[in-house]
Image (cartoon, rainbow, N blue to C red; front, side, top):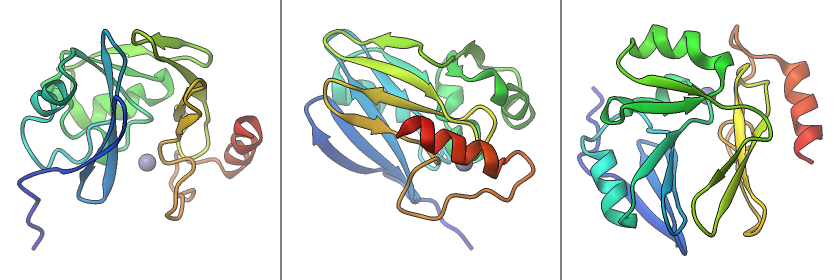
Length: 172
Ligand SMILES: [Zn+2]
């Protein structure tokens, strides 16, 4: 039987940047001077992710998603709205219902957090609406499930290996 952790696995990575581990899934809290992005919400294994995130950075958080697989959206109900590529909306609605208002992410979109800008890069392949976030100034790429140290799943119906290869070229 699986017993979820009661507390998140917390790793400060640098100024205004935290990795929050939820049962092996990494979430990122990325802060500027005025607001922060909570990037994905994990399985939802612990309650109070939003309070934890906003307590850590002392700022309001925008919820942004790399994609809508269930291990990335588990605590979304703690937010009123979430930024998500429209290619993921049907999956999100099927898994999480109608309680969270969805806002569209698109390639090239920028989030100004105050002294820190994150740029959306559409990288379909692992799923149709997967995105990465690029912090050019700090040379950081938040790549979701598209580039990681574990195997990338490309065998589910929503996956496209051809799109994945194109996305890797685009990222490079
Ligand atoms: Zn995924």
